[in-house]
Image (cartoon, rainbow, N blue to C red; front, top):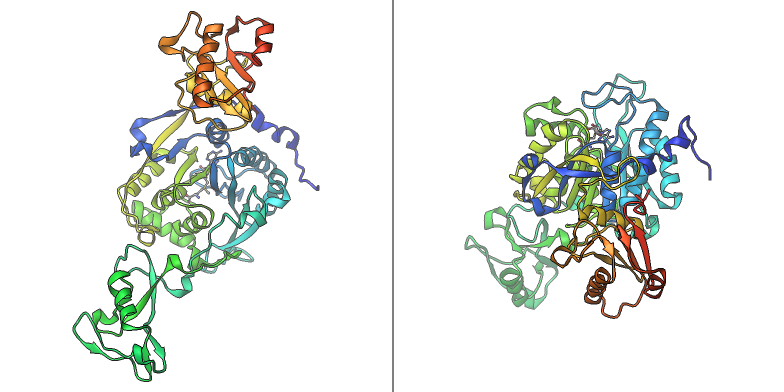
Length: 512
Ligand SMILES: C[S@@+](CC[C@H](N)C(=O)[O-])C[C@H]1O[C@@H](n2cnc3c(N)ncnc32)[C@H](O)[C@@H]1O
């Protein structure tokens, strides 16, 4: 397939492999609210942060939205955007590879980009993801006012969408958009959500639909002239008293209407043309910043909450995990929290702490800007703030002394299975995958049960591992891989027991 070449391509496409795995260290003073809500705000270069997430989140992220620097040459306050094209391509390539590995099979990647860089990006995304994974190039109307600075004013951005499932199969995972033309609203705060109303009358005369209806204000109404009511009286009473669907406009004086809830009406398939009216624009994003911090210039290039809300609506459901590795002012996390998604945001600038933290604090306190009112946000949730810690492996590839069992366990499991680890770290048995069990003897994991030389594979430590296997899968009779400092079992025993022994630290290979 045709590919894009640039000066440092050969080196750049290997970058991700060489990035060290680092620890993520929480900064409790900058965390807020419910720490168990599953939201992580990470300050650091996303190349290292994404790699740090891999052993825990590979294949788990439902939606990635990124809005990387556009290589526009303009001087922004918060990042150096003046990267030459090849530097830009070399910077984005390894990050796209790591993002691809974090994406779930039913997930999708959305990349916001301008028309100067978008076409280069499309070609490398095709290479990293595969052309068959390209879903669409959304054209988002980012401004409506005329721009006289340029020969042809720039009114749109591109949002390139890719899905590992492929464009056609991803259709089963994406959500439809509500039909906003139908004017749904929720003036009476109906717990079933936004609704529109249709008249409760029908053309013609049906004897059993010609009764009197008393309005909440006490007026007694007949059907409109030449029409009957929309259903029989018992059905009307059921709709009114059991379903709570009857609405009397004009403060209870008007003719009855029936509520049609947004959630029960079929929606619209998303299209590639996104207008400012339906998806917000840069002007609106600036306004949101102004409302939040009383300072329009607090952040230069925010996106409107409505745009992100639409993307998360199409690509995810409540509880799904969302990732933005160029977090900027924190819009993606703010919207993810307001709409009940879990989120991870990565931002290398100091504004991660000075801007995103206060913004998200306001969100959990229930701020009412952006999409809050539309989605009925009242506050809650929380997040943990992290910075990048030391590497897990030193330069010779040895495990650092102070690495705790769960961290090494996640790395061992990930390097053996390509899957993220979510064990509890209270047993040397890491799990069973594809018919093979994996165990790690490290750092006193055996606790009180620790026989002499707890990190060594002996008959005693093997018996403890076998006990845990029997608890997890009583019928298991597959092979076993054990990582430990040494094995005291003979090659014959290892063979008979179908054990592959791997020595820590030498055989713990950080997976590229
Ligand atoms: C265009 S802004 C994103 C704006 C964001 N969508 C919003 O609504 O606020 C790009 C952000 O990416 C950050 N960034 C650039 N390179 C990065 C890197 N290597 N790691 C983490 N963040 C980075 C910049 O500091 C900047 O805040």
